[in-house]
Length: 366
Image (tube, rainbow, N blue to C red; front, side, top):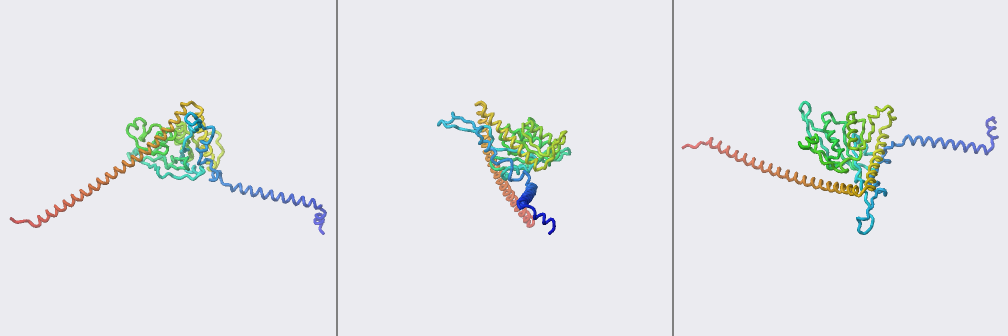
């Protein structure tokens, strides 16, 4: 018998069992680590739909916080407690710039609002050669993510120099709230507005908080330095949170941050947006709750005024649609009458021409 085999026969059975158990344990540990490492490499990025950072019921969750409830027993004749959430908006309104993928950060599928169309050419200006140029619309589309989130998608990267002033004017009007609502279209103003505001777009009196976005999220890699600087200064003037991914200003710093993937920056921007908007809403709601009765009354009055304004705007739109339909009907009837009168005139002229020709061809002798 060979020497190695005789050596194995002399090993005690207990030692053999221990060695076998150790080998099995090491093998199992190795295979487990291999499977864990393989699964970690196949893990989807943090922007996967199963883990979006912004909930579709974001506003409802804030309203459910008990520390934001304002109790008022004096308004109820039966003595029970009425609670309200003064200072909490009805919707989360976001404005994105060259960032269509931001909709993936919502835990519900967003649908495009086909009723709100934002065409270009609201105002027309002339270039240096005198050619008429239709000014490009800043807003591309409006998306609704459930009932509590609205995303207004805009684009600045494709705007050329001939439309440079128009998009700046529209951006200022939207961020400063000089529109009837958050999703309103731009309209052409008159000479008085151009004289006062310096813009051909129509300015409305500044509305309430429901007219402005609560945050602006932008892809800075698609814009030049001048556009990024104007956007940041406008947001600062409007006291609007600005969250930037692919920020070109990071390269100006002496210690630029470590590079990250686009998906990682997109995910982090959504988390920052959620935290910033939530913080602003909670601070405002607490200020109203813990403030004086005047502040609470003012906030409630503004809410009622905004609701009344929305109802009035819907009524005005319906009345304007009826006027347009009536105008189109009158124009259509006038055209039909005009075409009928023209046809009758042509027919009578044709008959007269035929009679004249017959008279010339058959002269009567005296």
